[in-house]
Length: 139
Image 1 (cartoon, rainbow, N blue to C red):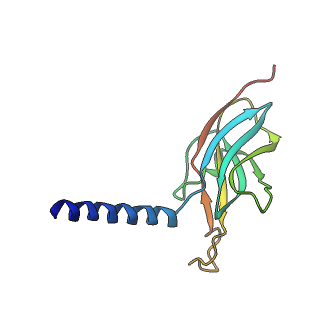
Image 2: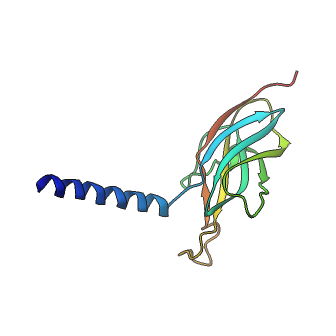
Image 3: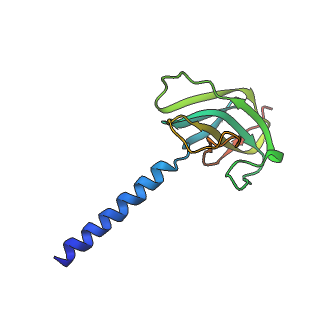
């Protein structure tokens, strides 16, 4: 009886943790590479729609988890079909300079009702994990 009670408690705690994580989801940047100077990403698409790709010279982020603006060398709007689902591949139009860089995706929550106040800018924005890339010199 005690084992069943313990097992039930463990399951309940695990379910609460999963529900909490799902409610505070971030876009997941599955991979980032560079092909002929263009950043190529694979990102998971769900209720969060990828909106912007950022390339920076440092992994440093602010209190929200966004790459520091001072280090960002390239930003580009991500244009995906409205029906895009699952894991999506996207390639930047702009090229990035040779060296080591860091890539992040900014997404917006499209999941419906939110508790964002109207006056708070970027309340629905979510920042992905940061991926390191190496850009080869073209010489």
